[in-house]
Image (cartoon, rainbow, N blue to C red; front, side, top):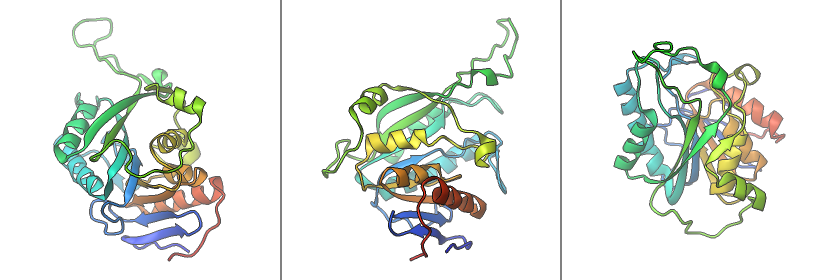
Length: 266
């Protein structure tokens, strides 16, 4: 059973504890304070991508205000030993050069987040370059890094206060603690969403930074990738998205890719 009314549970699977909420994360009351062990998300980049009825082309100042609001809410819903993995751009060149990553970290610290580390994700998109500024000239060249970053933050304590079961393997731990991750991005056409990330990204974050059975949150669920990773790796998952069409897309992917049975809403 699903609901298409904003501010309501859209989907819930009791066995796997996978929940989709159709609401605005900033104002929703359906995610409790100090209830989340790990937040994994890729927020809107504000690079003029059309997300259904929403297009993220607000001014950079408005974008930073929006970032501050949702990160304040994220801070409240995390447990004291909760962590956050934010997949964000290093910088932005559409509409003027902006240091997105640096501004995110500055906002996070002002809110109260503690900084732990940064992972560089090389998704192999070097061929996407379309502009060089002044070609072969010192007049006004553009420097564009073909990578994204995953900022690792935490609320108050980096070391987990509670004990739990870790399922990361020796080889995974050795590979993933190297802060340069190399794997391909996801196809927009295949997923049906303008900015999907691959399951490999939340899978690594979930296994590295949470215990089996922990509660994971994605406040910008989009196509549902984080919840697919939760279901496949024995974590409870909550996803929030303001767009009911993306909530349906996420539900369909969870049912198909994670092969869980649909159950009625509680």
